[in-house]
Length: 232
Length: 232
Image (cartoon, rainbow over all chains, first blue to last red; front, side):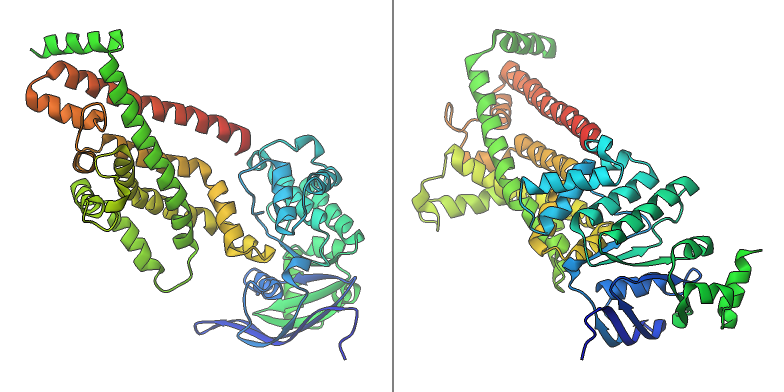
């Protein structure tokens, strides 16, 4: 019988493109309310794994159980924005979810206010800074309140202050009842945010443990090397 | 001789000659209507081909690109045969009418609008495709979003179509018949008056034609720049 609190389940999932195996026999279960950080070096398969969870990439092998797409949100390292104003970007997502006016405008306004973009509602989205653009991506998530948020390196290339803003917003979205799964190669960030670490290396899950245990005593040589690399 | 013709042309333009005005207005009406119909058909068609996942997608694209180079006289001949009394659409009574000319010009410029729209929308889709999929958008929702997203570039496609239509002579000559006061437009008048040796009217219409195209493009450029500043 399926566990009621289980949100996401991958069983022996593999992804291959041509003769290259991107993910190999991934077993992963995420419960509702968990905060999971998928950690690994560039090319370890973090983004591919998130895309599999979101249904963007079909597994070559294995089983996936995930919430319907409309109950998920995926944000990218570089936010996908529309050539519209800030508030119109949020309203677009609400319209796609079937939210009608005037509720659409009020929900969009609430979301951008919550994400600190209220004063920029009528600004073109492309005129925002990198950090503000990521906050806009999170405002869209905020407005939709999905059960699962998949965040693919959402703070890569951001200045430290903007990174903290985005991290705080991720936690604020989580507080609304959204389960958070994010990828990063930033160890300090993983230490700040993770309750559970899934460490990927070469497309395989090498470790899957509570964050405190993982950082205190990594079991695998790959994880030890990776963590040691950070202190160099 | 050219100097005298130029002075006479200037005189006609300054006086606001009624014949000249009627011919110019009919040209604008026919070409603007054809551009409107080409937009209604060509934009969704281009978007559909751009987002098509069938194996025939490349073939459709090649067909559209090839259709851009359709010789106007061939289109004119085809439409003439369609609209002639014994043709399949003869009952409509459109031959030698402005409606028939609009029909011919629509056929002529729809491939231009569709082909340019296809490329524009394909380019716009590249950066948004994954996000749209993650939102669970339907094909129709994508088409609508991308047509709006690429609106500034699509305006250029429509201007290209309008430019081709208003400068075209072969198809409107064959389908319209160049009947004075009824189907005589700027290009057909220029051709006729030049062959008759009435250079002042031909020259005045030539100047007016270039000025009109310049005016339409100028206004469109100003509008585009204003919209881009406001939204993008």
